[in-house]
Image (cartoon, helix red, strand yellow):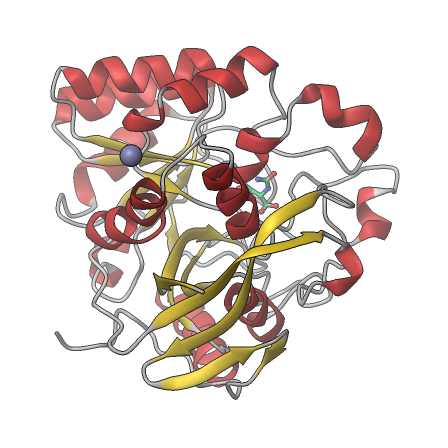
Length: 354
Ligand code: NCD
Ligand code: ZN
Ligand code: ZN
Ligand code: ZN
């Protein structure tokens, strides 16, 4: 048996308020515990989006009633909330800016608006961006110019990771995460997964891009699932929304990579616990750990998952390493496939006085 700290997933979409048929705070946080994550940071592209005091308190009320694991909630940058958002900084996981087109209504196209948000959001509070390619380069340049710490979400391409690596070597105040689907899938997997189901932003990339992520892992700060559940009916429909469920498959994939010497256990703990805790300023979860059977070899099947999405792009893949038990703040919250904590057991990590 292998014992890991309670892992932190700094990028999940739990779909509540608004699209609880895809996921809600109960099913999403049950999936987190089943996947070995005792803390999740929830993205603001819900319906309505979380972008003011009223919507933040709505999300936090729902989470308080339903969450099985600990959490914090991001607020989203909009066209007209740059001056008001900072008043919510202490209650939010951080601020999220969508600088390219993806799922949800929160895209910011105007660079003047980026600058305003970079200026106003407190310099010591997490600021995350979805930015790809040229957009990433532009946001990085702005972060350096403004000496503004910025965290880049789901970096997926060789040009992007090399740019971030070079900026870090010059002392830029930037951090980044990569997602399991960009580490373990490429565009060559699209025919097997199916074209609608393969839709994700950033898109599945080339083998060279995938290799660059592995080769530059020392420039990566966090692993983040970007758990983005949509139903199979939606994914197989006429306008498939982008996103993959990922909370329950991430750790088994990482452990398989450890087993294949692509990664060592110390790096895994840095990427899934130490670094996200530092970057997002999260309190310790006392008496919290994850037990793993590191020898269990098992096939991933969507129908076995706790997520309401009920499917996975990793269908049928054999992995080595299985979460057997999770203890959160002294309570046994997951054992042998069953989530044992009650909805509402989870704590708002921003409400904990340290
Ligand atoms: C995410 C979603 O569905 O909310 N989709 C995705 O493809 N990653 C949005 C996002 O993280 O960009
Ligand atoms: Zn994104
Ligand atoms: Zn996301
Ligand atoms: Zn090592």
